[in-house]
Length: 240
Image (cartoon, rainbow, N blue to C red):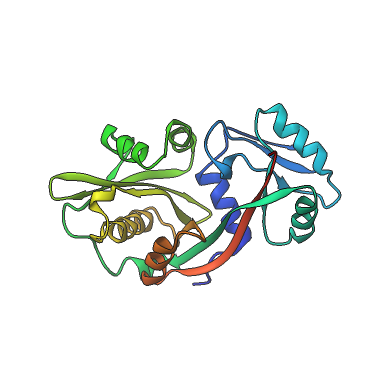
């Protein structure tokens, strides 16, 4: 199959990890994130002639620090923001793979479980990894097909992830393994479990995004046969 392009993955991000409110204003898409992180708080460009100041004012009205997502084709915006004192934040790598390839293997029995809504123990694992109420609210408000994957090692809940489906693509978010249980293959097994669930829902591809700085995650996804299909980054105002 042809892997999804960047335009498709931008849509998948928006629909599987939605802002509390999104709206068009003055040539921009504005997002009210309510503590759900950069993906649900950043403004994106709709019209080339849109004024950056209008977006800044709208974000401040939402109580947010001005933050822009720089996608394919946004080189001019990137340069303009740099000139206004904006700094690069979290360069991101987008991965994708056909589900048919991802589901040739299966996790060991009783290692992973599909769970919705997430259990209290999953919320605790996420909290330990810095994924708090704002991001849990994102998962709850998503209206796409969705689930979570609970990973266990022995009798211990050890990892958790959220996965949603849009445009035929499953996207994994917030994959977290407790530190004491890392390097035991659980993240790999949870990723495959997410692919198996997505295949059962009729999806065609597994996708995810990770920061460029997260070398361990990038190595894991590459080892699973996932391909880099795009990049993006944020620009945030350096108000210091």
